Image 1 (tube, rainbow, N blue to C red):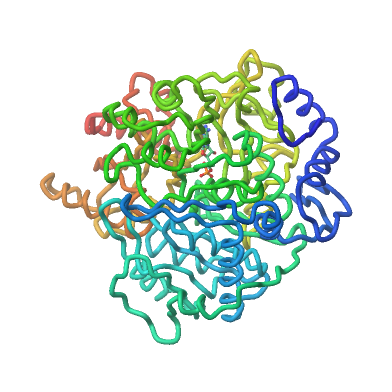
Image 2: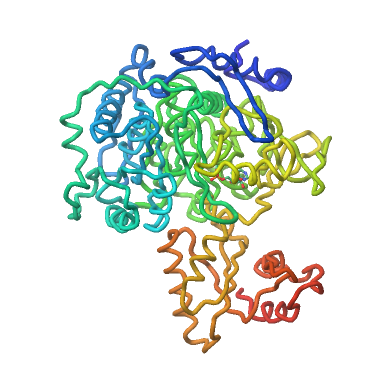
Length: 636
Ligand code: 6R9
């Protein structure tokens, strides 16, 4: 029996039990059977969750790009590794074989080396969804540089904060990006960001939209001529198992974004294993994950997981609505996609459109459908199942996080019976625990509590860049020796998990994690604003949308309020990005506060959700009278 590819429920339980009884042996077998190691590990796992310190495959030496590219060249050299589907359907798709990928990654790696990039250096990547994005990640990994991808929808402020936090000296970007019928001036955003980044001395620019941009002498260079000159081979730098592979920022409930650090061997083993099992990938399947590589889903399931399995992975530049709402289904038909992985917010947006958009395309290649990023509601699940899967494709509702590196709780197709809204069962090696408010583990079924993971897994983030104390405090201090996810969950009578949503001040809007604090900080920069509080409220398409309660320094006339609303959203766009704009802004003279001065978000949340019948005890508030005022002025 191979641990690597589970085929039915009985086998799942066997493998799961084995993985829990003897995790080291389990993860040793997975690692032995499937990868190219330059030196074997001395110890599979060492850990101390009180520090927390975790190391997987200690002593091993490897390079992840040899695993993702070189070793496939012998058996699959002419197989397509990446299918690039451009934004504009009339532009030809590009098929990049494993051999070609090897050459392009090596050339890019040599260009980076020529610009002084060495093992351990951080490289910031701010690119649209074009082949150079995937290639730049791999080029960094080839030479042991640590990539830090910043989603190209983030603003210049968000970009410079991230560049400075991890002290990147080089930025890879493009002249611009296509997005539906719009173009975005990425280079302009980079120029603005770099005014606040004194240590960046090189910007490599990919030509994508042929726009007329400013190139700063000495600092900015077009990439293509450098690639044309570069040597086609590059010896991979040998990495220790625990050397960092990348940093990826995620929002916290307070403070600045957290640069989650993932290391080499464990991340590779974990993404490869979960990719193969959750998507039941078979040779010659075409896999498509619609996420952006700027998020962890793209790192793990567009780039590393698929390529470590020698798969064909689709990289899509466009959006679901351009040129019309049939775009996803057109791409599925065109490339005969077998596994399709997307977010509930996209499903909900498409479900609002006419069925004709999906009906006119041949979706018969599809075998498995995936969902990720937020809870999928029952209606969206059924729409997906009925109209896209034609009731013939298992839906994998995959729960995981930037911090977990890969999928943690998910059905395994053809093994785990699915139920809408349930992520179902933990993958092998994953040991969830539900905790009550007093820190006790809730044993047995039919319980609900806070979701923790009580044993290390290879894909877990090892630290927050530059701030290990924050890593410990955020994830390992709420419950002793357990990783706290920030999510609530319930376990039903059969042991299935259903994720109920965040229990902290992170709000998931269209699948993007947004911390309330940075948005409030941005709003408070407006000269007319005294204080603000953000909460989420349910939204038909986005899952959650943002509701802002804002105290103005001078309350003024209602007429000017509309202008202020626009200005506030403008500030948010500048500081974070358009994804964090508020749907509703209510001006008020006060915010409900505890006697210690903390904003009672619980009350604001209820008002935003229009659940004012049950506000709970407000008598202990410092200013209970403000609650009525806020309820009276609530925006419907
Ligand atoms: C992969 C990714 C993580 C947060 C996570 C949770 C929510 C993700 C989910 C889900 C319910 C699912 N989340 N998948 N909630 N069901 N299948 O999205 O990472 O961007 O870090 O977000 O997303 O709240 O804690 P990330």
